[in-house]
Image (tube, rainbow, N blue to C red):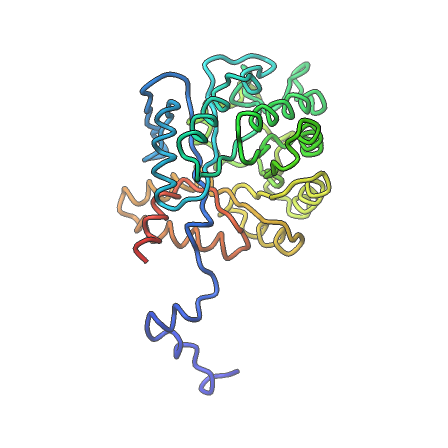
Length: 325
């Protein structure tokens, strides 16, 4: 098809034409809101690098969860910040742990909302790494039981889905086995399958108080230069029993989302991470771009690349914009 016989602009002339031929449509159904829960009462600590987001005590998480539900957002992702940390992350799988208490409270008060829980050890260890440390090395196999116990404790508290983010090899199979053995065979697993060692996580680490006390996470999170490795990681987690596959971060890794979409037929999640959120917010504050328009364009890009669901700190703002449409 060549000009002048074919004129693409014919179908761009007005909004109704554009609506009718739009290939990718973003919906509030696609959104998941991450939230940070802390011990205490009446806590609402602003996160400086993430405007509009807070460390919240349990009752305030419930209030925010209700707001999200009223906006039509189907799900939240819970992260916990404990009041004590140790080498074995015992608060991560304690029955009265912060995530466990928050799950119970949200499920009691906001019944129509799905609650997904982040399963990791970094917020709960005194060294800040995502697994057990032995002689300065993150011990993969020694970490698996603790991760599985954490996932089980979340399911027992009422979590609708568990989402391991640690990037230890074999953790999906370990979690699936323990859940099934304890009667939670219907609890799905959202695997952070292709999680890159990214500089875009910095605001999150402030929010979750989870920065490593030594070294970095390059020995277990993926090298940003690798693409084929992501497909191997995803395939392994699918074989081990993952129900949803996640790519993290999203915007800097749209090619990975696209490749994963071509390789698997499971639902794909993408995490529009804290650094991606913070950059847009900062530029909007400085008047360098239109924050709302860039927010929506970014989310459309993630969806267009192949994501079925998007974890994003923009979830409430985007839901309001979609309502206006």
